Length: 294
Image 1: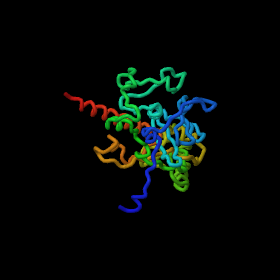
Image 2 (image 1 turned 30 degrees about the horizontal axis):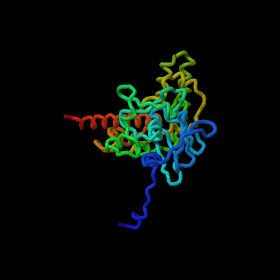
Image 3 (image 1 turned 135 degrees about the vertical axis):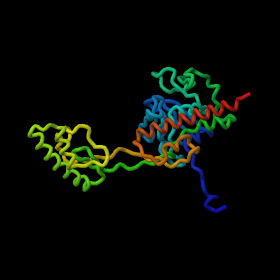
Image 4 (image 1 turned 60 degrees about the vertical axis):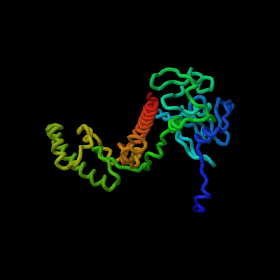
């Protein structure tokens, strides 16, 4: 065994610490009721439904309920569903098919205002169905407690400048945009002659397209908008895009191979991660039930 391997230390995230029994306190910070975890500095989990990470308020994403907890000394960063976090903070191990909710939404995520709900039957269930942290845990329940970490699924592409011409075409460099815009300007001049002689927009567009040829679908919906646009080249930041990693068919996470190597907007990527999490949960529930055969 190499010295590097022998000296390697394992840094744990908040989920790991809670599962190992880290002390949790609940009370007022002077402004609101919050949960705090022993050994995790600068982190408060508000009963109002968000976290305060080193003074920064972070709300769970609407698409998948996840919230990002930044890295700090001796504690790794973590993406975790807010309801999973609340479950752990109250001493229970999350289990597939069940989720904590508020009895009264006006009272927030306080320990006395929590109830367990069957996600499939939509009925209230007993917390006795969940193992308590510190008790012997079934292997299947540990699998259920794991949330799919979006950082393991995709990598973010940096936002870059892109250039939009008057016909709506988008280019990565100004040079390409200027070359195309020159053609658009000349074509619009020819089309305007047709309009001046009452030739109509249908004929004008045909004249325009003799000068500006699109290899793919035309970037505009209404040719009148192109003629009315006198803004020239417009600079803008590209949409935030992420690219999914490569996954093998039959590998983990389930069905992730469908998105291998493909790029999506951040919003769509969040929806995919949420659906993959749900698909895995359903699969594990069915797998667990199959073991109960008699």
